[in-house]
Length: 289
Length: 316
Image 1: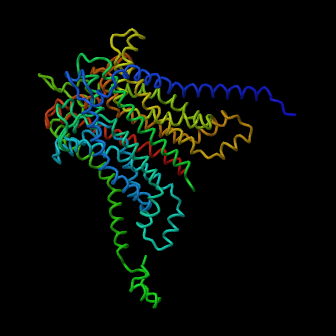
Image 2: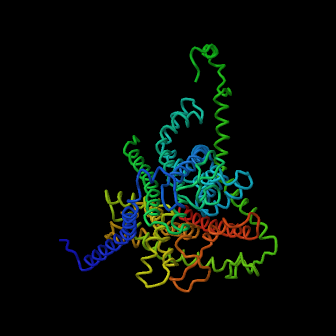
Image 3: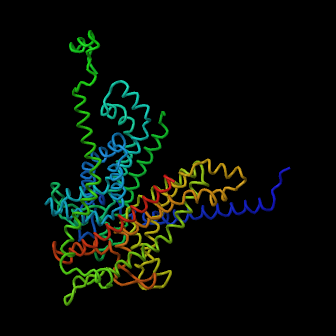
């Protein structure tokens, strides 16, 4: 009764062809990167050891470990988190729970989009102009951490906003009907239901800030420091900048060392992202509504 | 709210008509305080974006007010801030560097990210789809300094060998690196745009006997046009503002490129490379901040346009 005409067959051939081409393009994006990652592991794996992670660089950074850089990155991430998480969550709560549909809300949303799109080096210039010079923090962990915080703010806001909006409106309405104030509703009903989603966003922010280089270059990260930082007003080394330094600024660098640094950095970032993705999937599986 | 043991509550229970529902208790004040606090959080984004412009302009202002030549800045290819005889501050060659690298990157990223987005959104299903989405997300997370290192340590020798050129740090290297870097981000935004096309469009087309590809080509792509354009623009903005990868892979030669094997220097890379060597308040320092203002304004325009285009379709 129904037989495929020549036109049907031709259309299906075209469809198959495009499916193959598009699949091929998808692979083209991924395979080179996979190959590169394998190369990083292959060439940098030999550099990584317990000593590499927990000793200081020696011999003009051509030997020794990366401990000060690792510690510095952790310090910067922590300062960035302390500054941006409360602010980002507050902003998301405002946008999701309070903001009326008006010009100001529109402006805030545009500002968030733009904040995410400002080049990282412009964030660095802002950090120099505002934190290092105007607020007189000097080139310090504080200045660099705050610069990172502002850069990462959109990540926290967007992730938090998404998870707040995923909480069904009926939950809020039920709570309001009990006579609860807005804040009581947010505090007791909305936030507990959104907390895992917010956490996903925070982990993503850790990954973002740990990998950033340009914003910390002139605001608080140093090429090399003989001592570990003692307070937030000291400069620090950082893993991302260390990779830049050992791969471009130091002569006679043994080949495996920059590969090792790159591998540590990429592992750190990908681990954080995987954790965030896993948490999100767990959350999706658990969702009751 | 009220504890039953509370005598005041008991009193009001006895005389229900006297209950004041608008009573401003502790909770009412907490609610108002929180409202103010989250509002401050909300407008912080606006304050920061204005702050960025103000502080970068504040540092770069001196360059613009004292003997600034608009013509020299935008049309001279000579960026010689440290010249002993005559300093010149022309960003044309730097802008050409940025444009050539971003342009090449988009030649790589636009078709491949579109292909990947269509494949993930329309063809792949189940586990494959999930796997591809996660991979794209992880690819987008690789830090730019690692990409720069890849350009330096892996692409550089590869280009020298393949094309038999003396230097592998050039437009080609940075363009490919930047393309691979921007593609995953563009893929996920484009995929969102495709997913935003209602399923009933696809169903209607399929009911007419269209094949999957015909549905995509004739129905889904036209319907998602604006979202896709927005994604491309955001990709351009990313490429334009990218710093570390471009700093490490372009080869630091300030001139207008004539082939993809020429080394160039991008606007962002110039700031990153030179800011550390300048004295605060010097003309060179102020000139670098002026480039910063320029970058800020351009990315601002790109982002606003992208947002405008994406929003346009949602209204229409």
